[in-house]
Image (cartoon, rainbow, N blue to C red; front, top):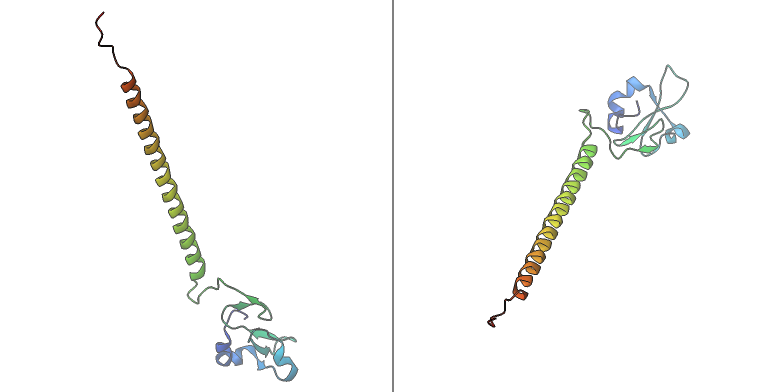
Length: 124
């Protein structure tokens, strides 16, 4: 019962029982609708969208849609996947960059060594 929104309260009122009155009307939290089911000797809440719990006390940031898909969780997973892909791409870029720098330094040191090896032109 707690997963239905308050906008469904009037539509499903007969199913849940009589609407709470007086002090009982404040039983549900966060704008939930209070009902007294005929088969139970307690109060029951119909919660607004994104609120759950027996008294609508819990905010569910990743609330499932009515079709059963969890768009908030999907969005979070996609964002994390994109961030990981970017981090891997930056890591690979720097590895390639440092290898090129190392190769270039090695080539420069090899060329400098060749310049120091000069044969004497003085005849023996």
